[in-house]
Length: 100
Image (cartoon, rainbow, N blue to C red; front, side, top):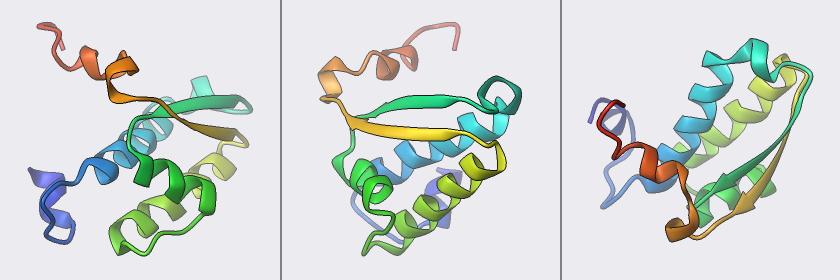
């Protein structure tokens, strides 16, 4: 809820949350990702297209989409983006685990 408060009102913020997790991972694991190439699987088409195109008509996605390449540049890392269907995205199941 705290993140969603920062964004423009919308029915859902799925793509914004997906991009926020990329930024979170880049900022919380810099030593692990520095000088690396990474293949990222996202299950929100709008999030993937924002990163592939480098822009979005949604201002929240556009801002997040500009931060990610900047973070990758700071880490001297590269990201490659792929869409995966939600039911095939095992990372979403991690949220349901009791110890997380």
